[in-house]
Image (tube, rainbow, N blue to C red; front, side, top):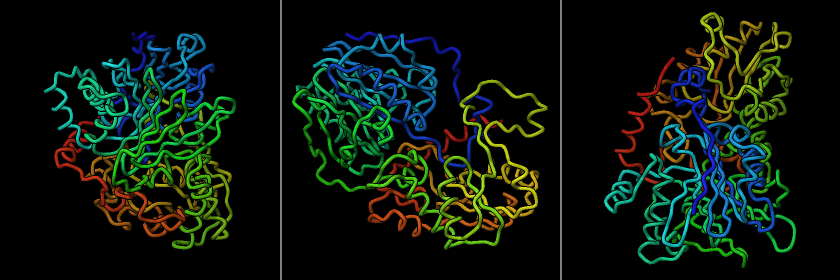
Length: 501
């Protein structure tokens, strides 16, 4: 039995038509992934734990949020469009009792931005209800969807996440138990998937054989031990859980009243963590490879300074993601670090159109320059990436209007030349500025005095890990999971249909 509590979402229209968050106004960097969270903690308020876990993972997706809790065989579900703090309140959380929970915060990379596509995806199986939260993208969705439809599966969304859930249900209907059904389904999936799956019997955490998207395990203090799953360690920290370890590529962890069991369902795992998780996506206070990402991003900045130093008065980062690299750049170059831009951290998403006068004067919703810092200065601005170049050019213009006499741009990653098909929105290749222009041509278009990117070798060396253990396909075109031509064409069509204001 499923109990669904859901508020109206009329105030959240299809965000592809949002004038402020339109194609033209998106930042010059890849868009967010998704955040997944799960907790098995009998006797605890699992809905509230999930709320705070998702709150910490909000940076991974701001379109929709949802929590499903299991109270024995009964599932309570609430999901809607909007930020975690908009979707949930104390009253709603009180209507989500249970001993385990699954949570999700979404940025759409497959399936449009509509309430029906919000997660967790909850479906009925022969063994009871299943709630699934997914971070990543499958690349064999066309084939998998056709197979499911031929077997009379009642697909109601346009997401690959629902397809995974139905693939599990299909295996279970053929006689498999929860673990057997899940593993059979995962063998049908190609691409990137980090999953948290709730059932009446327990909680699963799963990663694809390449581990492209992250997933970590934590423990809550007490006796017996209670377990937590989250996309990043910051989702553990906020609720006082201790990081235990990562879910390994090709691993399934099964958490029940008996504890945690591990199953390596893939015989040929090959670690290929998305390097952009290290550069940009994950929060700087999250831990990967036994250090905070803040430290790694500072090393990127130091390496960037070694490769492309320039004579200047000040260096600063684009808030917030460019700041650690800018500090590292300052340390290695000796150029004074200062704040040149102030970010409005409360802007969020807005559906109110600016006036024409505001448009003409250059609406500054997110970043504003510090004129007294910039006046008469030769400035270096550090950012983590450039995708299209549209907002970067506007930013350079703003800095010059604020009084900067020179503007040098430094990017703490290599040029993005290929789209991502594993759960990140990077545009089709013809929209990627570095795929069609040289560095010199990009510098001219952005109207900067100089432009330099971090080298691919420098980016990977700075990880301090085996350089073969990362996916860097967006820089090289070397995809660890082959991309069908039909999927490439579909992405190109979708990008051309985006609204440009």
